[in-house]
Length: 234
Figure 1: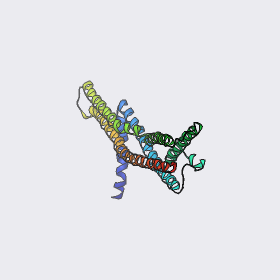
Figure 2: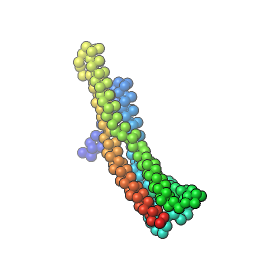
Figure 3: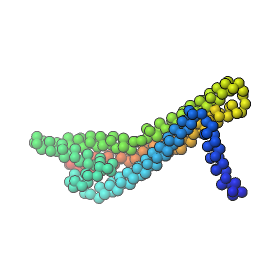
Figure 4: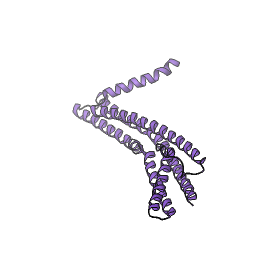
């Protein structure tokens, strides 16, 4: 009983290899291409998941450290040299824009605290857009695999069926020997397309949910940052 359980996957893989060997050239290319897409998709999904997880931890750590500070505008430059952290990037842009506007106002002999805040808020919005693009990087590629893999598999299916009927027409025989290579290639291409698309759909939806949560957290942090800058400038 135990031996039969271990033997089943081995026999299945052997059958798949035999089916692949009987496929036509086009179906072989499609199946191999889908195998490459599958490896890329898994690499992107795992890489993006751990990247977002790492950025979230860095964000929360920076935010907790920033909350402990009594003032933001007079913090040392070391706080603005951590642009790899999304929250720190927003903070750096906001503070630098504030002091740049303050310096211009001082040269002109004007008290432009309102203008300084507006410059800081504009800088925060630009930083949000930049970090949003960072969060969403690679997602379009993954979405393309999710939507494209079934169609590539369908192409292999149609091509395999066409080869099967072409073989029947050439040999003027509808026997199983004439139909088997084309039909098996068609089914293998369909399976390959689904094997790539199904895990990618779940991975894409998981990453999309994480992205939306982190973008919302980024916007909430930006609002809190703008409020603190406004209070300190009064």
